[in-house]
Image (cartoon, rainbow, N blue to C red):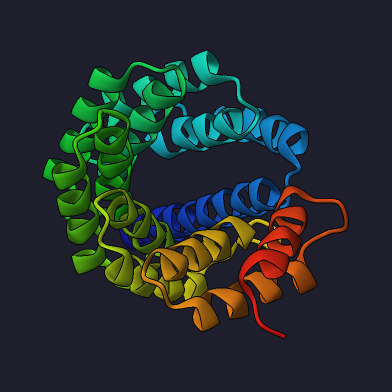
Length: 245
């Protein structure tokens, strides 16, 4: 009977600790999303003592420092997480992002590819490989990587818009317009941040000699851009040059 009681007590303690761990990790994620990075770092420091061999706490610390742009500190933390748990694709993805920010492109590519071997359905890894391929002026590979990202997640706005820019550079303007528009539908960027995409849509229509469609875009940009912004001035100039009233 005593053994049964002890067993049940241990199970209760283990389950309670597991729930407590998840609640604490969720709290760190919330603080991170709210931009309360200093508070998140303090909480991680407090909690890590309770989970000295838990890779998720090293990863959580790495994410916060990434957002603080403390890239070397973040890299050290994610390396610790990988030592503890080498099978998590998200750890390698974060390491790839850190190496990319440090402009170590070949090393970043290696980490993104490892992340896909560990966890094949990481759409963002393909997106980042596409970004690097574009920087290396390999447009065919850029499009291929974006396609792979969209197979995994067909609402990945970064991949859709990125593919739109690649197609624009390949002079495939009509298809580029389609990807730009689909990307805008799911984009979480602000209206002002999306003005560049609208400008590329307008420019694509101009190249295709679809002036009425181009003018609709330029007028949208003019009406929705901030006063004295680059795109508002550009739109007003274009409206004066090519649009019929």
